[in-house]
Image 1 (cartoon, helix red, strand yellow):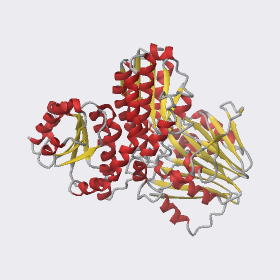
Image 2: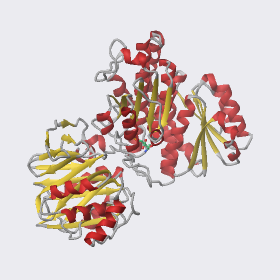
Image 3: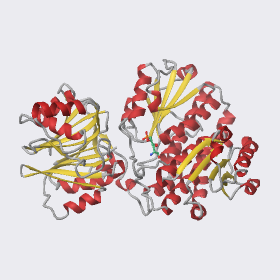
Image 4: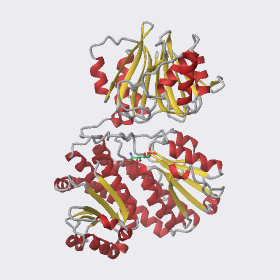
Length: 609
Ligand code: AGP
């Protein structure tokens, strides 16, 4: 949610900040703003809408300055508007603040500021409370005022602050929301995410919880909550700036769909040795531990949760241990049966999803061993886990997750195969056969992508349906949930996924002429059952588009259209069958003129509860 960029140094702060914010716009895009220190005065400009609106607003302004902070917002407190946009300022206008996250006690702080300091508020945001609070605590030392303010605040936040009367520094602080510092030469940066700084620096500091950053043009200093200096290793970013550009595609989402073959090859090749065995380099889980886990939890949100649904089936099949799967926002408020014989698997693209992070912390407190499957290297989930199984998907910019999902699946295949082989619950011959299938997956996806035009054409007659259902059995039902989420988040079509056998227990009441049902029928061993469920739908005059394996022509008589995926073993199909569904969602959304990379109401990384 929301993006932060701050700069101090030899170049024009405004240019760096706007450039950085553009790279972060996927995090939040309902308004944007900037504050600069210009000759000892703060100049603040903000505008509702995307960065472009802010850029237009300041085009003709004199915005020359060496120091500034900027923000792109995803509304939590207060509607998107010029007034609610960040930065917010102290009563005397001396301090400007940008903020990601939520201040839980902002109501009581606001009352206190009104009563004791006669503060007046112009916005509905919790961030304005932070600015006013730092303002009333300020006695000529911004660092001191930020420390005192943080002592009074509860919640999750990354905050950047500058003062008109201290033009030599910017100050930032982090608690449960991502924050990094970029290390330049005669210039330094802060940001909420790595992509914001890729164009400028490759060396960064990853800031930990409760740490405060004091950034001057020559130095980045990190302090702990007791104001003691902290030594931090420099983190070298290996992504290049191009990885975060559209590269000729109309949208990041389409580019990322097309990047899947390569991303899957990267994820596989980093783990697969010449002997065909999976190396768990950097993962310290032992054979004894694998043999002794009595239960596995998989916990995640959204798309990552859907990857977990596939993971549950794979682990139970290969490792023969019960797997519970839960959405993180529910897991953390239950009293789950977790102990020191539990393996807790967290899945997260960003590694910053607050619900997932808090669930992980609950599991850790209860003694579980925590392994995370994460895309963003050095993210908080990665840092707080005992072991990390990285997906090598590269930066995923589109809000709708695609390559992160398939690489998460790849990690789950590899992890479950490794655990099964180690534990002796999976025979080597079966293991080798699945590995061979995994090696062939990227080329099979290339074949599906080659046929994209057919899917685009199909959407021509389907894009204006009001209701679209996704059904499937077994692994197909897991993919149905993901296909449905993809469609609804970017096309705004009312879409619903359900295990096909469950239809008759209620949802079938919604089948009517004009209803479209996407039927995933790729599981050979469940095909006859699936065919019956499709028949039930047809009997209610709904239309069916099927996803089936090549060669299954018999399905054509029950379907308006069939999208074929290349032949593969039943357990591999999720890696393939999701691709036509991603393309289907993309082309439907495109025909409906939706904002594909930045759908309304959504943000890439959800760092609030
Ligand atoms: C996917 O298309 C969504 N944007 C969303 O469901 C996402 O997968 C979810 O918020 C979890 O994010 P994470 O993987 O970064 O933890």
